[in-house]
Length: 422
Image 1 (cartoon, rainbow, N blue to C red):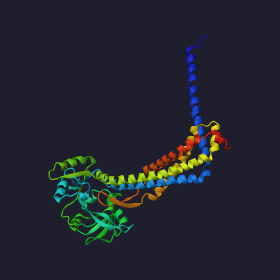
Image 2 (tube, one colour):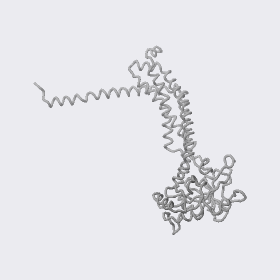
Image 3 (cartoon, rainbow, N blue to C red):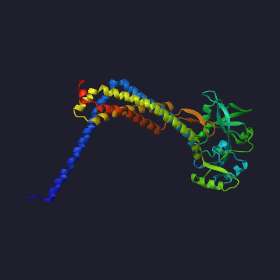
Image 4 (cartoon, helix red, strand yellow):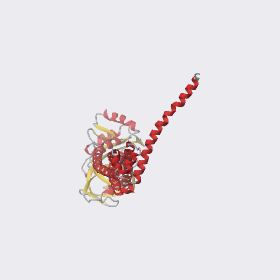
């Protein structure tokens, strides 16, 4: 007698799931084999301490160097980027790539200050005409002279830099041969201390204060009254740039348009952020090239160290691997276990390297030549979480490459030959 259709459908639904446990069992068995072989590998690391330490040390060294070099780039970027506000405009002569190559007359700075877009405080536009000259200062570390930017500033210079503050001494007095130094300049150059004098040409200048500006590039400079700098360097009444406070970043285009239609002006307008981003490109490209090249070359040595370690591990466990294969363990679990062991060593090396880089480099102050201004810029090495992540990822990549070939060799070991060594 035929069975009801409902019963047939019920039986079919009962039969359908019986295929999934088989697939699940296969996957579970495969993972179980990998974990079994991997645990066995890790237990035998103690027998290969020397080789394992060599591989771990090599990878840690590569990661420490890579993160350390790139932290220099991050610190340089931070010094420049932190100086740049999107709602502050820099106006220079058209065609100028930097303030040093620019030039503006007193009349042009007044025309710029009359722009309607500029923010006013108590009816006075927040604009700061400025100029910069290069002076020599002896470095604390080597005693050799280096270029330092001496900025001729007006009282409004502190108002368009929102994080500016004098942290020691006082602000310079207009009309006097007095200077204030950025925190970075004071830490890197000799004689830049409150109460001391510095001499440029035939003139002595009194150091009356130290200032901070949120870690920006301004802290690499020395400031004095613009009119005094103009007289001392025979610059007449000329300036090199004008900083203008805008109501918002969105007002930059309106400000550009307003200046571009004035026939008396032929200027280039950028936000501070855009300007300093341009300044940082050349050195950042150089640091990237050097950092990754060094890391690649050292990485080759670390890979060879990992290869040697894992080949030693495979050789020492020939009989064990052959026995596992004879018991039914697959080739891929063996490969995976060797690669996993190598990557665990790489992970440990990466973490150690990151710790070394963080402890050894983060916060260290240094200086280098800013190609845009041809003066020294001070900055602090900055080890960011992203750099640490890159270091660990590079360590895992090196250890993966170092474990693949030994893993394949282990999987291809003839079972009979391995068992003969029992």
